[in-house]
Amino acid sequence: MAVGVKESTRLEERFRLWDANGNGVIERSDFEAEADGIINGLGAQGSSQADELKRAYLAMFDHLANAAGTDRMDKAQFLRVAEQEIINKGDAGFGAVVAPTIQAIVNVLDTNGDGEVSPSEMTKWFDAIGLDQAAADEAFRQLDTDGSGKLSVAELVAAVRDYHLGRNDIPLLGA
Image 1 (cartoon, rainbow, N blue to C red):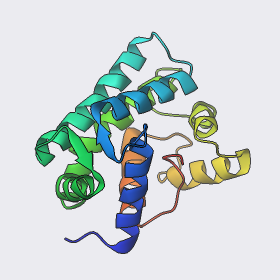
Image 2 (cartoon, rainbow, N blue to C red; image 1 turned 180 degrees about the horizontal axis):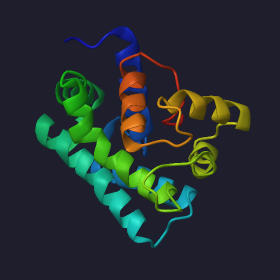
Image 3 (cartoon, rainbow, N blue to C red; image 1 turned 90 degrees about the horizontal axis):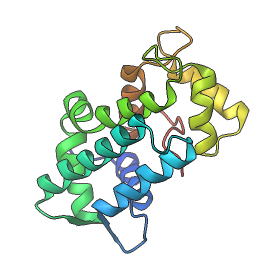
Image 4 (spheres, one colour; image 1 turned 45 degrees about the vertical axis):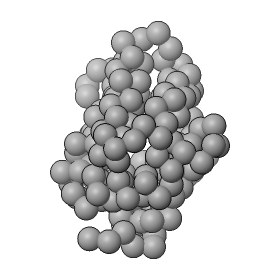
């Protein structure tokens, strides 16, 4: 399956966001910087959940870098490997590459330990990525596909998948 225009644009945006130092390549340090930014933004410094989040981000980078055969991916390499390892593999690709990171983020957000994210817990994430309250409320409503009033890891992985496949425009990843 070839990446469509919308999917390619979203992957290009993901590349831009991951290229933390703006040097035109993504490296392990870029993923580390994003993880640190999330940890700091959520006030989770020094927690075991923060350590898990950082390990998950670095494992995602390692997976993509190993598939690319390099520890410094330029945009073309990243687009190729993201298509190969995530997009083309569909649910399995998102499950293997993206889900562990989402699980780690949920573990940071989930303050009551029920394994899901409530609207009040998700507000921390929406604040961290700059969504105003009205947009955050609408995004949560769209993300809660089973109507439970909470978000499961499966719902969040599906939302990220659908975003990258151009099936939704839920602003879950920041800008």
